[in-house]
Every structure is written in C-alpha cells, then in structure tokens.
Amino acid sequence: MTAPASLAVPMDEVYISGALTAIADGARARVFYELLAEIVSECGLRPYLPHHSTDPIAAPDLDPRSVYEIDRARVARSELIVAYAGTPSFGVGIEVEIARERGIPVILVAERDRTVSRILLGSPAVVDVVRFTDLAALRQALGDAIARATKRGAEQAPDAVVQRFLGSLGAARQLPEAEVAALLRVADVDGEPARAIRAAIAEGKLFGAGLRDLVGRHALRGGDLAAFILHDVLERPFADVARTIGADPRTVRRRVEEARVRLELAADAEAAVVGQWLVTELIAPPTRALQLRLFANNNKEPHEQGTTEAEDHRQAGLAVEEGEPRA
Image (cartoon, rainbow, N blue to C red; front, top):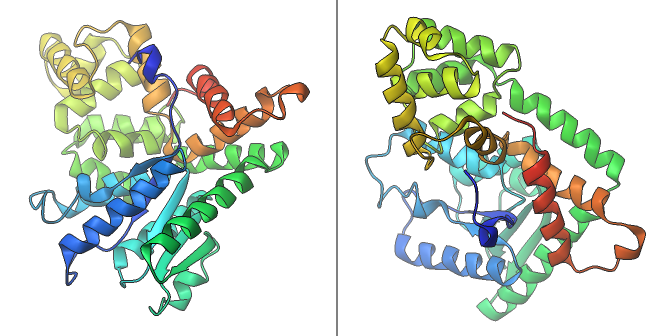
C-alpha cells in the first residue's frame, strides 16, 4: 500500500507487556498500562497495547491460537519491550522469551516492594529494571531507561548489526514445522494449497514469519489466504492457482480481491502496488528493528554525526521503505 507522504516515516514500536488474565483489578491494571504507553510516547516512540486488540474482556471470542499469533507477531516486530513485572503472568514471561529469541531489549517495571521472579530478572533480554514508589518517579526512571536502551541499540557497531540482521532473516524464513502446521490449521488450509505453502517456506519463497503475520495480524483464512499467497506472493497465474485450490479462475480472482481488501489494498491493485505492500508490511517482523539500526548507521555521512535522533529515524524509515526484502 502506498503510504501518504505524512505517514511514510514509521516510528519505532514499543510493546507494552503486562498481565491481563485473572488479575484482581483489571480496570486499574489497564489504566496503568496506558500510563506506560504515555511515557513511551513522550520518548518519541509508538506504544502498542495488547489490550486494545486481544483483551480477554473486550475480545472474549478471539480464540487462544489467534491471540498467541497476533501477540507474538507484534512482540517480534517491536523495537523494545516494556514489561510490567509486578504481577506474576505466564503471558509476560512468554513475551519476554520471544523478545530474547529475537534480540529485542526488554525493560522490566515493578513497584519497589514487589517480588519479581529470578528467572525473569535473569533473562538475557532484560537490559534494565525500573523500580518505583510513585508515578512521578516512574515517569522519570522509565524515560531514562528507554533513552539508554534506544541509545545502546543505535550505537551498535555496523558489523554486529549486519550479523544479527542476517541471522534474523534465517530465523524468519524457517519456522518450526510444528508452528507452520499450527498456522495452517488455524487458517483452515489443507491439501494441495497447504503443501504449496509449506514448499514455498522451505524454498525461501515465502517468509515463515510472513505466513504468521497473514494468519495472526491480518486474520486471513481458508481460500482467501491460499489464493493471495499463491497469486500475489508466489506470482502464480490465476489458472495455476485455480488448479491448486480446486476452484475456477473467476472464483480465485474474487478470493484474491477479497484478501486484498482485508489487507486494506484496492481489490484491483496493480502488481507493483501489491509488491510494495509485501515489502513494507509483510517483511519478516524480527528484522524490522535491525534494519532501522542498520540503515541509520550506514546512511549518515561523517558531517551528519551530530544530527538528532528524530532525523536518524527519518532517514532509517526512508531507507527501510526502499530497501526491505520482499517476504
């Protein structure tokens, strides 16, 4: 999708992690998470709050697998995780572990008198622990921690960033077979279409993380998902796709158009527009933050070293739009 000029520069996303299920005062917890998001925004970053999408109260009919896929995808594409650790939570632990797998830094937040699990504190992903006694102190301490974490990422040596970037590409392409099977089951895709999608992932023609995003974040299912992948991602002609999914070409075209609309593309979008969407939206989530850092480091001339962080992000965003590999 072609972004308007005013929206072309992506802001780094920060995932706000915290307990949502079976907590004593859910309303108060959600207000606290909104405060964490406000602090993130004040640091010039974009917060993502899971309870706006996968809340067990607001979205009770969302099945557990979909919740897992959606939240996993959002964690994996984040620049930073801010996790409230004052209330024990399986979900927070899982999200921190996903961050560790992807090399994403985590800041833990908890009241000074709360006990935090030692295994959580010991996670290699955790780069800072913010303890607080009042909200004013929290605002200052968390803001400072976010500044340190983002500066640490920006100052990484380019060679190290390149190596992490290349490593993340491999992990994004090849999902474990069990996860691919689960995604296909959730998406109601089987038979020849499922075999074709599995082959595309094995051959590197489709990022496994791209399949995860289509099923989780974009909630594509069944024939629409199969038709979109086979035609728009793998560039197979309608007649070939029709044979694979056992439908006539007219039905396949309709399914592709419906999938595009679901993805906020025009039903009759040209191949170039669809291709740009694949580059900017279906890029393997684990690589996005690394690309921002990589392009930010490589695109600055010596006389530009004193530019502001906002300018760094602007340049990085433009580079990502032009240079992200197709999923």
